[in-house]
Image 1 (cartoon, rainbow, N blue to C red):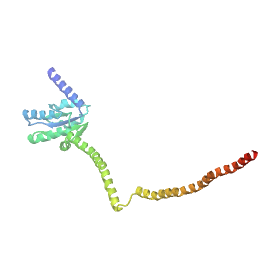
Image 2 (image 1 turned 120 degrees about the horizontal axis):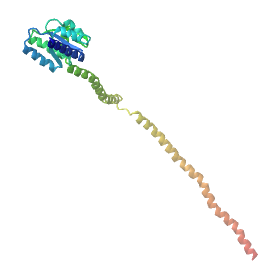
Image 3 (image 1 turned 180 degrees about the vertical axis):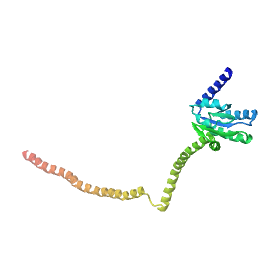
Image 4 (image 1 turned 120 degrees about the vertical axis):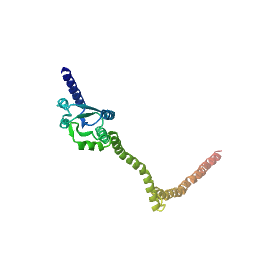
Length: 237
């Protein structure tokens, strides 16, 4: 009797620990399954992060009271085996659903996900969802799509600009650019300025001519003044 009580206490403690560790579990009815089938199913679920085990309903009800998986108490009827899920619940639901095709005696009764009860129909809907890895890949693809689009636009922008400039040049029939027009208009003005400077040069030479005449006349004046001096010297003699 003491041993039986100790065993029950150990089961309650085990279920309570698993219920506290995860808020997700799936309840099944295993009546009609062979030991070999249960072992096969247990191995498949273990690979997906779920621990599948047969429990007594009365002990489970006692163990899950006040835990996140308490809502699954509504499904604890008949021979019960529970899969406590630490991994991808959709992958576990898919594995259980697929196993029912191999062993129709397995029945999905319901479950609990993050503290909320799941019906059999909701478990089947979860089984139809892609796996967690596939969903993550799809999300990553959606996030990367705008980045790829932006990269394509950035690459196309210079190319489209070049096409636009070429089309504009063709539409103008090869007309000179604004820079060329400004350069052409500035050239005559520069030539006129140079011509004005050339014409102004002779005027400066004409103005300078009288100065040269005065220079030549200066010696004559000196000779005129010196002549009387010579005469006076002779008279003195």
